[in-house]
Image 1 (tube, rainbow, N blue to C red):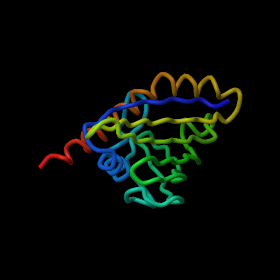
Image 2 (cartoon, rainbow, N blue to C red):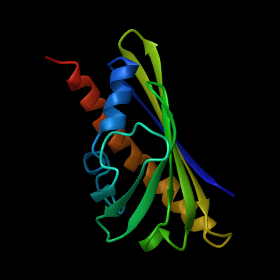
Image 3 (cartoon, rainbow, N blue to C red):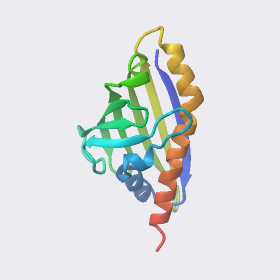
Image 4 (cartoon, rainbow, N blue to C red):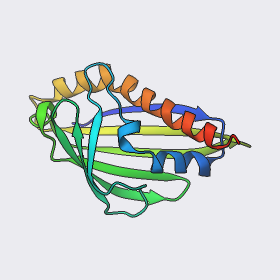
Amino acid sequence: MSVQISVTEYADAPAARVFDAAASMDARALIQKHGPLPAILEVEGHDAPWSTIGEVRRHRLSDNSSVREELIGFTRDKTFAYRLTEFTGLFAPLVAEARADWHFTQRAAGRTRIDWTYVFTPAGALSEPFVWFIVKLFWPGYLKSALQRVKEKAEETGQL
């Protein structure tokens, strides 16, 4: 059974600008340590803005673990999705894979809703309660703090 978490943020910027801010943000600036969850310290492989399905990169994290990330969906200014596999460290025995989906919706002139959803597939029935606990307790703050950085980048990009 999968474990899902979603967070939402609003940015005072057009959807195209918010999308560009998210898709082009350096992963090391986006994902920072939050509580017990690690920061991205290094990016190996594709180290440019997401743009083409099939792009792959490996993240080295501050807890000495790593994860493989592959872009699996991309519709300019609207959505992108990626799959995380090959976990090392704490998540290796717990998670088979995870999928993240970002959706950008123009709500009003110059205001965009960002929805970011993660779906984790536990490695087995015994790991499911641990994945549920980690995802439900720690992941919302982890994602919300990252979305705040996207919001700030998108909103400051509009300033001259």
